[in-house]
Length: 126
Image 1 (cartoon, one colour):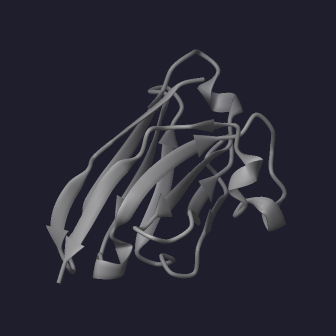
Image 2 (cartoon, one colour):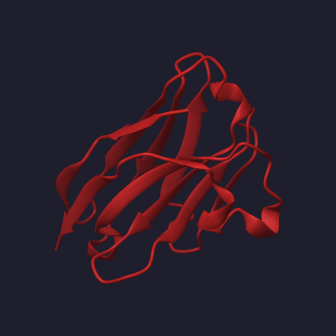
């Protein structure tokens, strides 16, 4: 599967932004999906995960209550709605797909994902 992320932008602190990740192919609904981010000089970190059917989601503590991951399997797209953005949210955001279900204790591990989008830059100014 090929992933194409979009929605990059510059936003002021407290603002909102929505990222999209479109997937190729007709089997998108089979893939659990995740969002990760990587700030300059830092390691890639987990942001959110959504199960195949979309009914179960997981979040990093740093974004819980502010970010929402969702998916539209009919449109082969996963979204990341980001609200109340903070300067520390500034990073390149990546969407990722896994070929298999991931146990809850492992959804934060980027090595569990098989396919990656190209990344999209989010900049939050103070």
